Image 1 (cartoon, helix red, strand yellow):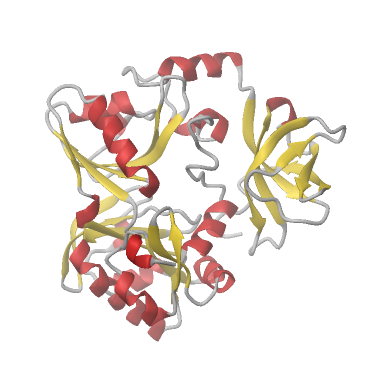
Image 2: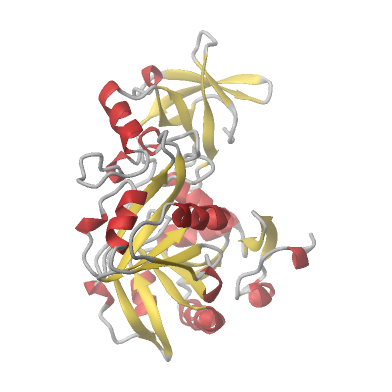
Length: 371
């Protein structure tokens, strides 16, 4: 792999110190694993794991009309946000298809941080600039910001050793700005994550990322509580918790309602937003298809793109994500299927290689914290 041709996060040079296996992930040289996907997955479920997610994009939107502008871009209602509160939402095309899913952080009145998917940075920023209205400034700060995620039931106790702030006071989807982590200043500490476990996402200046990574691992490894984790475990963890992945559960052809994130679509908010008409109509007449969880009752593992059929061989959808669940010890999948096949207990078949393998629709999420 010619890593010199790939984008690198600020931590790239020290990956090798921790045994990373680096791959090409959407044009980025990123670790798929350190000690092993299963070991890292289990660490996050039982103790804690540390992820480098500095490839994610960050965009500042400021100005007198920042709030009203963002509210025309996204499906959720950001007028409900308080300072130091975050919100999950999506941006849509006029037909309701998904531009991206993202987090919006309210830093102060008239100043917001939007965190977007790495593969969509250029597309998203262009989309925002194309639809900018009023008095707003849009600044792509992705290259200046690093992001680390410490996830798992021991995350708080590990991170607490680096700061005097009482982390237990930071609620879910809340954050603190300007935090000092053992001399690393101006860190945004957010109680959010992408694993289905408790944890924090830490935003800081790129040139401070190595120092924080090493401080956290030194503390965590002393107690045997923290492991460096790669993209492989991040994917199996988010999959078990049924957290949507852009490009799989969410695409230009799969809207937020179909993807199961209707909780982030506020068609009754006062503000108009791009895609509102299409999504309102779809809510009213009902979905033609939706993402469901399936369990393979035969032999095989469902993978992205595999076709899904009824027992009488009618093609009713496809797998968006699938794997063998490390926690539940089952072959599971998320599938976009016709709405009339979405009820729990519905029997289906998945085309795995040359075999039509038995499957059944099951309730989601597959995994809930504390199981």
